[in-house]
Amino acid sequence: MKGQEWYQADDIAEEYEEKRFSRGGRLIDRREKQAVLDALAPVEDSTVLEVACGTGRFTVMLAERGADIVGMDISGPMLQQGREKARAAGVDDHLEFMRGDAGRLPFPDDHFDAVFAMRFFHLADTPASYLSEMRRVSKGTVFFDTFNRFSTRSIYNWALPMGSRLYSRYEVRKLLDDAGLELVTDDHDFVLPYGFYREIPGSTASTFRRIDTTLGSIPGGDRLSSVSYWHCEG
Image (cartoon, rainbow, N blue to C red; front, side, top):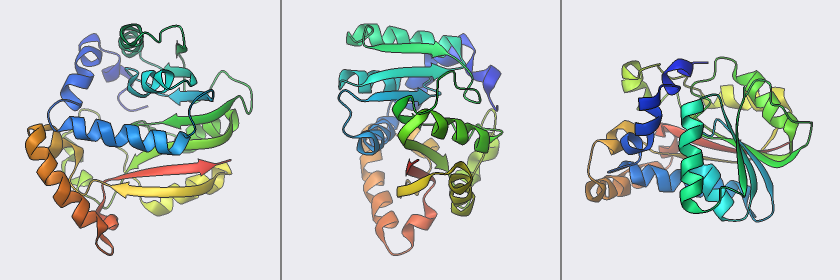
């Protein structure tokens, strides 16, 4: 999987959220968290698996809302950051972090009410096998995001440390069909790429965000979106 060694470096794990979700990146964080909450609702008392949970941004948020959640990642340093975040939030006894391979999920069939993965499929070398595993262990909901091929994401993709896998909508729908998943809703956002928002102050980012959402709302505007959210059922 792309970036496997990069994400396991201690300094990358420690600086991950500060670099991505400070300044204008806070806006991205809020949007992603709302997308997860919308797809997984109702959250309270549901059993959830987060694949590639990283530093636990979503894992801790869902535990705070009453989910019985497992966060799994291949990076030990990232998981340690998640455990520290859970302790600080007072939910460390309400969730579990575990190290594992998303291609071989260590759970029986239909084990969770919902399974989701954020910021994962752009790194996936075999996306079909990962998605099939998510489908296998979920009773129903499978939710994930992708970065889009025909978008501003492609402009700076070459500059990323490990690159990014970009998807067309046709490719994603084929992956869903092959995994036996039915698309419930798809949402497409961020005409301007994430990297742009991270480089500007939060107050300025809000202005550009209004322009961004306006562009995305015009007829055909969502075709320019760099990010897609896919809410599916098995």
